Image (cartoon, rainbow, N blue to C red; front, side, top):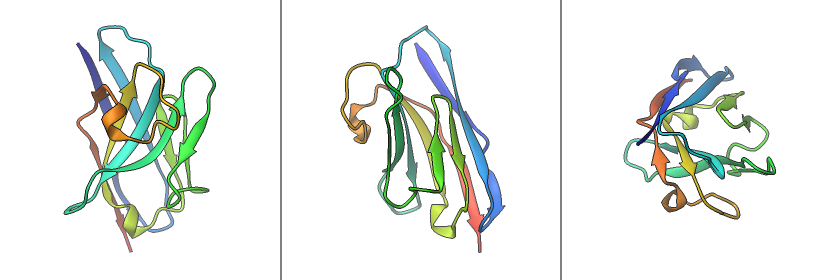
Amino acid sequence: QVQLAESGGGLVQAGGSLRLSCTASGRTFSSYAMGWFRQAPGKEREFVASIRSRDGRTYYADSVKGRITISIDTLQMNSLKPEDTAVYYCAARTSFCLLCTNPDEYDYWGQGTQVTVSS
């Protein structure tokens, strides 16, 4: 069984930065893509960013472009805004996906880490 664990969340003022990490454990697996999603209270889970492991191709939600950078195991978030407040989840996809933006495409999920941005 594969477990993913997020870390690095917390409370930050608007304009600040956070670096989230995603650590895999358990059964060895090969990820085709890694993604980050977030869910704010009362809202549906939404796509934040994804990266395809083999070619490094990245995709970002319009709301975070220019402020967030994804790598295979981290999510660097800069210039944070109060509307970025949510629980952030990392996810792994083991087979092909094109944009890798649909949460239903992902095979493994972490438990989430809270990010709170104060105004």
